[in-house]
Length: 237
Image (cartoon, rainbow, N blue to C red):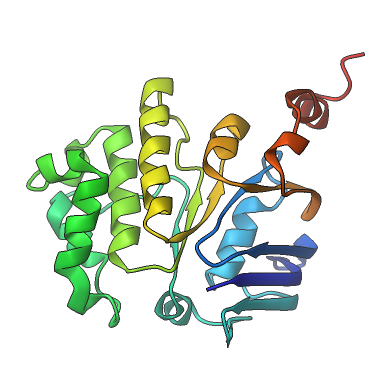
């Protein structure tokens, strides 16, 4: 289903972070969000997922109006948010954590098929299924967190900084696994500071600065590395 975020304003208390922000994600599409830290990317995902109530604007997913909806209603509609630095229950095994992700009513009957899909995308999780989550490496924990999200049978999966703090080799492997998720037809919103990674994963990118979209990149050839450098660090001339 198509996600449409129109003129969204939201924030924390009296501090408004998002200012009439508009993005869209086509059904089964993949969109990347990048921009300086503290400019609203995480706030956007938290508002879409119902953790923050918008001040103004509209959030639609297919025919459903999710503006101001509770988090459980957003999950029931098919949107799952894997938060930045997601924390798993440390004493649970990988299999127990994944099973917990299938607790939404619509997902529970499909938990065995979902588990097979997660293990196909992340074979390392199949190897670690009986291992306690606290013993996983950083990359494995991130794989498990995404796997928990997939167990909810999402139509749209939102990943906030999935490669944060990972070594380059592990980051590359995780990006390849996320690409496999996209091939299953699940829509994606991926927030990351690695623009090259986003370009490899997502046909469409949005640059978010000061709570609004300042670049809507529909063609990857439109984005030059020098443009990104100047946006982040100013002109080098």
